[in-house]
Figure: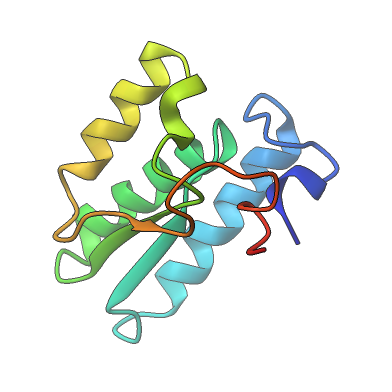
Length: 114
């Protein structure tokens, strides 16, 4: 399922988004020592919000877990607001590796793996 197919889209202001983020955080917290690497698909709003929640848990309880981002194309963040790009860049500083990029350039199908 793509994030845009969720009933609330990518809006972090919808209460269902907070429930989803809480659930993701709970699942990670329950996993204890099983998770060693997290790959986060970056989308606006929900993706940034969820990653920030995961990072709070990760930094406080699981500092050994590595974090990596997945981008659909290199210019994916170009249309984001400066504030969102700054949040993303701040998150990138916590990654050991550069983001995984699905396509070398934007195409209509790059978000679904075509």
